[in-house]
Structure formats: C-alpha cells, structure tokens
Length: 232
Length: 223
Image 1 (tube, chains in turn green, cyan):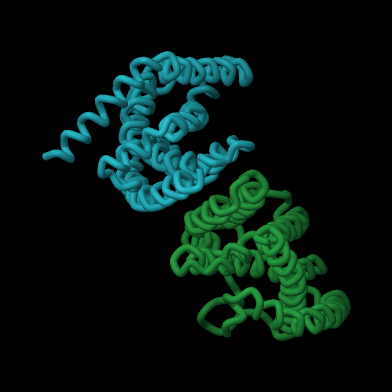
Image 2 (cartoon, chains in turn orange, cyan):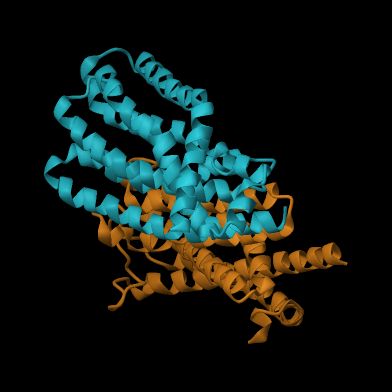
C-alpha cells in the first residue's frame, strides 16, 4: 500500500491503472446511460425527470468523497510530514469543484419541474453551495501564494478547518426539516429504492468514480513532474 | 508573575497602537453607518419593511465592516518583526493568536457593540429586541475575531489576493449569521439558540490557536 504515500511508487501503479480506468469508465458510461435513458422505468410521481438522479447522486457522492480524501491527506501531510498529501490536495481540488458544480446544476435542473423553483435556501443545498465555495477558495489559494511551502501547508490547514462542513452536508437532511429528501441508499437499514433504479445508479456511480480516478491520476502525475522540475 | 507582566505590557502596547490609529476604527464605524444609509435608500423608507429586515441588515454590515480591518490583524506586526520578538520573549504562537484575538475583540469589535443602539434607532428596531441583538453580537463578534485571526494568519504570505481572507471569514460565518439572526425571530427559543452560538464559539476558540499559530509559524519560517 506504499503507493498511496510514495510518489515514485504511485507513478508505477498509476501507469498500470490509468488505461483500464479510462476504458472501463467509457464502457460503464455507455452501459449506464443506456440503462438510465431506456431500460430503467419512469417514476410514478416524477415521470422521466427521475433520470437526472443518475447523474446527480453519483456526482454528489464523489464531491464528498474527494473532500474526505483531501482531509485524510491533509492530516497525513501535516501530522506525518508526508509531502505526497500536499500533492494530492493541489491536484484533486479542481476535480471536486467540478463534481460539486455538476451536482448543483443537475439538482437545480431537477428542482425546476419538481419543486417549481431553481433554488431553495434549504439546509442541504446551502451546505453544498458552501462546499463548492470552499473548493473554489482552495483552487484560488493554489494560484495566489508565491512561496510553495507556505502555500501547501496553509491549504492543508484550510482543508482541515473546512472539513467541519462535511458532516453538516451529510446530516443536514436528518438534522433539519428540509425540502431535499433524506438518504435512501447510504443509510444503515435496507435501501428504499427499487433494484431497477438501483442497478443503473450503481453502474453510473462506478463510471463517475473511474472518470474521476483517471483525471486525478493525470493531474497527480503532472503535479509530481512539476515538483521534480521545481526541485532540480 | 513575569508572564503576567508580559501580557499586561502586550495589551498596553496594543492600546497605544490602537489609540494612535484611532481614525481607522472610526472609519470602520463610519463605513457601517454609511452602508446602513445606503441600504435604507435602496429599499425605501417604509418603516415596517425596514424594521422587519433590520436585524439582518445590522448583522450583515457588522460582518462586512469587521472584515475590512482584517488586513491589520497580523500584517503590521509581521512586517516590522514584532511577532518574532513576542515569540522570542516566551509566547508560543498559539498564545500570541489568543492574545491578538482578545485585543481585536476589545479594540475593534467593542466600538461596534457601542454603536449598535444608534443603528437600532436608525433601523426602527424595537427596544425589547435590542437585548437579544446585544447578547447575540457579544458572542458572535468574538467568533468573528477568531475567524479573522485564522484567515488573516493564513494570508500573511499572500501578496496577490488578500480579498480571499475576507471570503474565508464570510464563508465560515454563515452558521453564525443563521443562528444569531434566528435569536431575534424566535424569542421562545432564545436559550437553545444562544447555547448553539456558544457551542460554535467554543469550537472556533479551540481551533483558533492551533490553526493561526501554525500559519504564523510557517509564515515566519519562510519569510
């Protein structure tokens, strides 16, 4: 498991993983989109708009997952002095920002026909918007510091402080009485979703994970190369 | 005993500095009042509209005008080397952050607290709501000081884009705004809401010395 903390070992593993991830993401996307558009049934209340869920839910999960990964690597970078954690922070933040933006846009496209409005000031929506702005601040911090050491450590501290938002996003639907529905799949009891919708959702989730992984590998490798040229 | 003397001399120095730069604090307060005027001109002088959104306006403008003075939080002491001298005198960086936070609360936020009654007269806020506003602002302004300490210590080495510091404070102050404006609207929930605000204060006060101390140390090491 050393490839998770060691850049040169990560490079070796990434060379093996990158092409399969890209190809499997293409295959999974084509299967998942066919399932999502043609093979899965309409909802009895929402009609055809339920198909937006197959993009909305995986992107939201990945947005949260990306921030959780960044938090773990910030702890690793600050506490155990593993510089690879800072590389991950720099490389992965724009990916999380893009997935959060996809989640927000697809959600508001769904909200217009269902709730009758593009946006409501509901706890879940607000906390996800804050998550998006936190991602943007991390990206801007990457651009605006001149000293590299200060930049990466300050970003790691900011990621740790901002991780307060993560449980708020997750539990906002339980703590407050919101318009956004509570979790149907990622809860402790049996998921209250029909298998005919569960299967395309899982396929689309894996497709999103694979696409995110492929982009992340590209960005992390670029970051490692730029560090090497900076140091030498 | 020696450390107590040092703390007292620290605050004496802060007092001298803030007294000589008193016009800066006064300018902040003038900014606050001018923005109240502009708010009222933009929504029209209808008494009921103004008094229904008055608390929100006061809180928003207090937040905005307290982020204006963030640049001065550590920057002057950082550039003329006083932070290093304080550290050499036996204050750890976290302790410097706590002292600085209290000094920011006393010298920058308390004048706002004193100017709230005048703002309440201008915005037609009822007198019995004033006590709620006061108690929420007394806690909330200390949270704002802690957040300001974190964000300004993060941006010490950031020469290009200092507005990022204000954005950081504003994004983390969202829960404070929600709960402190909620205090006035739900008078029966006053106790529970003020307990939530106090809880946020304790969390932020615990994070503050760690985060700002680490950022101060980093900036001084790499300057």
